Image (cartoon, rainbow, N blue to C red; front, side, top):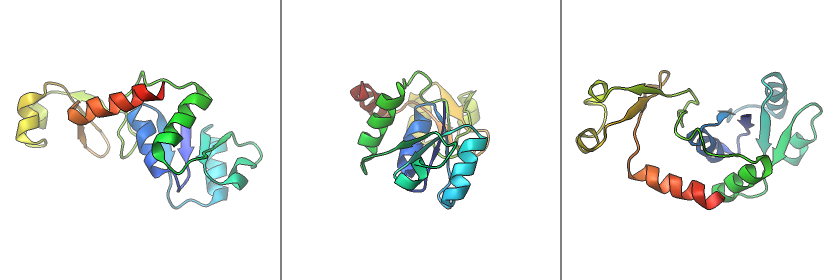
Length: 147
């Protein structure tokens, strides 16, 4: 399942990426550009704009809340999503992450992280490094609260 989030839903896009969903986000796109991209790329358009949901040929979900936690819960419940692929995409650029060796991230992560973590992933596009630190447990807890 692929998504396209409109300019009002950047935080939701980030969360969906963290949960493993291919989520495009264009903060500067017009309504026409969003609708066209959603159709061409066969993405579900996530929007808070009622008019966008009425576009012909666009599968859209009208997001009701302004709070990201409620938005995420709505998407998960409406589309029966799971978080089985969590931490497989870059939260920043949406690329699939690659497993990398610990030695390859030396000097790219804080020393404490390097010494306490064994597994790392890197984004091949923007080169961000990811690991399952304390933030990971918090995110997993929030995902479980959605159920």
